[in-house]
Image (tube, rainbow, N blue to C red; front, side, top):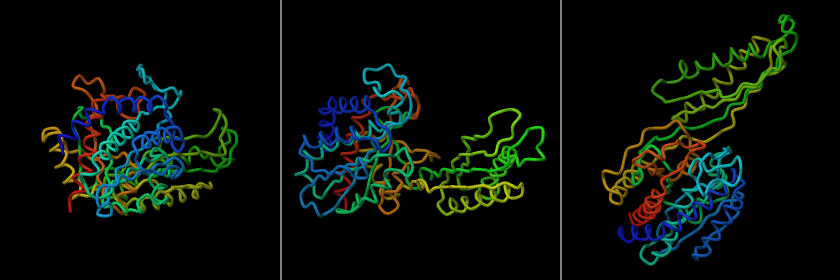
Length: 395
């Protein structure tokens, strides 16, 4: 079976490559993936794969039934959305939508899942159970397409026994894969602080409540949430990426806005940190005579790879790409909404290497120059297929 999957991944590579070029050339932002969704639906229809569209807006769920379809269910997930970035690559498949780019590889993920779908559908008489394919919108934008897909019922009827997803990784060479059991990626919450002071002339600060000076205190003091309130053994990051207020050198403004992000690997500490951020901010503002609004909408939870499932997947990957081509990944403070799926279902989120030996494709994700060695998609298609069949066949 493993050789047949390799042969089919090679056979269908030109089509998978063409699919990727189409999706890459026509990127759409989070929750706006209407054309991408229609394109994927057309492909599934042409191969005779049963699917439903319009889930959480643009999402798609397909079912491939093997023999005895009620025996077991394995889910595979890919995201579809692009980023608000102007592409700087000079390639034939460059983005046609100015200011929108597949800079995180979601075009690759969807293409790999489509390639695997074709292979798994053709082999359906040789395995038992059901394989569920999830094409998900909005991974890059709060509240995360995964949460909306789950609310829409994609993890039911049938309920998956396990779920897998892959992601491009420019830090590993093409033909390799990376895994990490247990805690892998951080939670991600957005922070919005609005400080209301009393504006006035810069030369008469005693007649004002200066929100800029107060904002400086807030930012400085909130750093101690991590350094003095958090357990140093728990990876955590608190970063403020935007501060906006004022419009002249000689005017104290009425209002300042502060925007930031909190990331951590521990869900209990995550919510305690929310309380500290709110309390410290409110107390500083009250002490200085200002009003404040602190909003921390719940973002993505931390991503936990089921240790048993991930150990098996790593073993299966070694069988497919070779022992020397499977690597252990470092923990990352970036976030992934795949974590919503793994809250109640054993999951494994793994990486496929996408650069070449000459380091041509080493630009990081979320970068205007990001691109991949497309031979990596042979690995992605093959691993998706092989891991799914191994997982569905294991009791």
